[in-house]
Image (tube, rainbow, N blue to C red; front, side, top):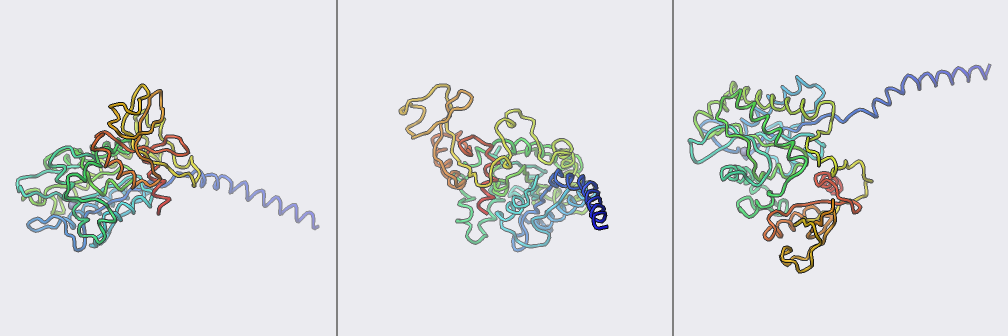
Amino acid sequence: MYSRNLHIRLLLLLLVLLVSAPAIMAQKNRKKQFTVVIDPGHGGIDPGALGKRAKEKDVNMSVSKLLADMIKKKYPGIKVIFTRTTDVKIPLAKRADIANNANADLFISIHSNASKNRKANGCETFTLGAGSSAEAKAAAMYENEVILQEENHEELYNFDPRSTESYIMFELIRGHDMELSVGLAEMVQKGMVKHSKLKNRGVSSAGFLVLHRTVMPSILVELGFITNGSDENVIASKEGQKKLAKGIFEGFCNYYETYCKGNSTPVASSADNNEESKSDAAYSSDSRPVFKVQILASDKKLKKNDKRLKGVKADFYVEKGKYKYTYGESTDYNAIVKKRKDISKKFKEAFIIAFIDGERVDTQEAIKIFKKNNK
Ligand SMILES: [Zn+2]
């Protein structure tokens, strides 16, 4: 009697396991939910740029909400996170932190442009970079100045948004995320122009702090010039806002279908990315990335007093038969950003690289790990 009972119980247990195993496996293999962060610029006591009747913060919010609704409707599986949903002021650093902490796949910051020249008009999409024109640089400078209203901005950012010197640090951003960011920017810009009929100012790069602090593909959209009469009519009207949101949405869909569908980590097409980038999952949690500044590469080993080193005490590592010279070394990414800034006076092309356990790794991944460890 007793043994038969046990037998049945064992059979039941086996049955439960058989039924639930595929579900457990599916759970394990399930990909991370694709997450997009939408960042309506400004808010609260910071209205952003002012038009004759509209405020930038309100325009940004309306378009952001319309965009989010469109994404959620077409892709219920995509997670949409806002940096703000109400009229409040959010520090720039916090906007980026929200995206980084959510391990987001995309960051879209929505702004409206302004100029003293009231004739300036059109929509434009930015990625992070050195600044492709004086106007692009001015737009970044204008948007970055919001940090001056934040408490402790000197400590928090170590960046003077009004000094052109500060912007040198954006010259060396490159790698995996850049290609994806530019891809997204081009698709979004195309969509916006098509639907809004605003003048096409194209895709540019500039030193936007908020983009610098995010660790995923990210763009900043300038919907149009709130200081231009006919642009304001478009961007401040419900009709115009719908068209702009539709355009951004179309660009988003295009990007998502091209790079991300069925593949939660976007893969850029460039071949050399695959070789050098490794997922942080490949490293144990206590591997700390070491950051260095690469200043020079040479086919031959250089003598210590070689002119090309410009008197800099440099280390080197060998990769694919090339001697690559580096300056500085730190596990603190922020410290190495400073080092790079210093050395860029001598080596304009200097850029940040990262190592884990002595092995070169993707810099963006290393920054992610650094940020995770220093939360
Ligand atoms: Zn703005």
